[in-house]
Length: 257
Ligand SMILES: [Zn+2]
Image (cartoon, rainbow, N blue to C red; front, side, top):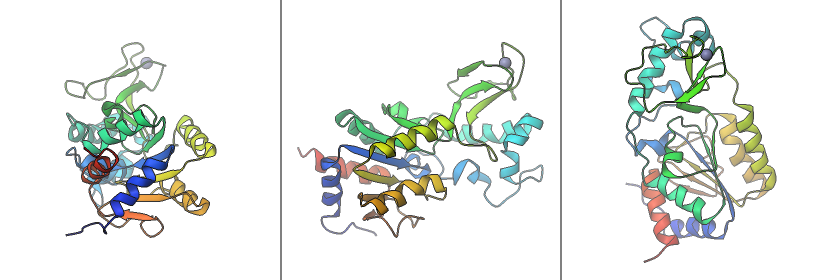
């Protein structure tokens, strides 16, 4: 079993204590401790197998499919949503929200569409892949949030214009939200003292990018992930641990009883 090197958790805690501005990048691994599957991006439940329509999950969950056959795209979105339903933030989400309360310069960049960071109380969150429980009309400006998809007839119809409602998430083949990208650029331009990557394989360039940028700029970097990732070799500190356990132990060092 992996045990962090003596003093490594203390070193990471010290980096956080001394930092004012921290960018925390999160992925599915942070929600694993809330019981959610660690899929790679939104389609990982079907990674390497075809849907019953004979489609790859990238085809089934594409913007194009949502436009042409929303009932197919919705079938798989609903399956993912059913896996997220009822999930609650875990200790890692809670510690990150507490850190933001102590340090207003803490930002979260997440790929997760489960909204667990906001449920934990984080406010400076860039949800770069959107929110599955936020629906918007494909025809008009109507939008609304729902608790879950139970009882929705799929695909749901817009109460205003009768158009198809869709979740406000980034489907395959769609662009990232410009607002989120601008916000991330702004956070990096203002400078950060520490970049932490938690529970993500960093497979996407915009997720690995800030870690590479920090490493080049001499900004300390920390990775928390039990597995090997795209950035494992370049970070200053690598904690091969689950997110909840690592963040709980770091918090205890920041707030000794
Ligand atoms: Zn509408």
